Image (cartoon, rainbow, N blue to C red; front, top):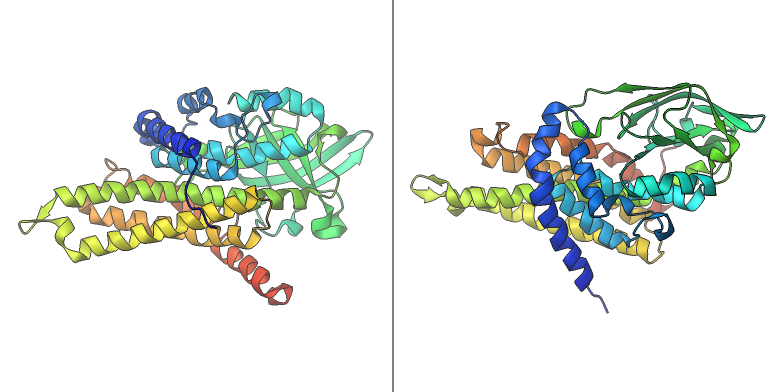
Length: 383
């Protein structure tokens, strides 16, 4: 039997999140973009309804939910503010700490993370490599009960506002992916420096680089086992990529709904725009594609909840959804004519914001390589 329905609880959560996004997030969406500031007021409001506690165990003040529900929440938040929806995506990062960190780190940090008081970022990418984790140049050397970290981590979401980062570095430079380890690094540690980026979109998440200049951290700040960082982050990416896709789709879905209302009310040549097939057909096509993309994501999240392997399905989501969202929002902008091009409407900001998902956590072509590998085996790989 196949059941495509959500539970009553999920539908209640969806309704509550949509109402919250429209009332609390949407009114300030453009404000933080214009100011290029972290959305602290919105972040606190999300804390009040428990968004930051997702991925945090109950004993540390969290409220774990299944991943299909996380997908619902992520999409609904993105309808109001794409940037604030990252709060739901961070649940994957929180789970790495909850699963692999030293107990003292859990006690000190997870309650604060669940309250939204502290943000934990993921620091994998470097200036010369992104998806090729085996090519990382940041190094960590064990010495007298400590690790000494050196290198630069780039393109870090919330890089300028995170209180700590999960830093991936080589502990065995000769072992490629088998020599990568993960470390918990508070950003106020001596030797940690930051540099902000001037991005075209998602300005409120304030991406940046972390510079590690002989950063000394206790040995217990190793997350999981030494040389196992690659496998830990790949497991996280399998879900993060789906939630990022849901963020993009949430923004596209909202744009499409706004555009349908607009073309029903605006006239040309004495008729509503909606009566012209050149207007209504693209909207019908885009709605169909968005629905198909959402169910692709829900299927991947359901597989994760069931403990099933879903690497191929995740890659399919990340390949397909961001580009689709960009195309849909672009169509919506154009259908609004010169109004859509103005900053009075949200389309230009949503377009700038959603473009970032086309490369975040792996480009479309990287996802196609993964899909081909899962379909045809490693003999299809270009490396």
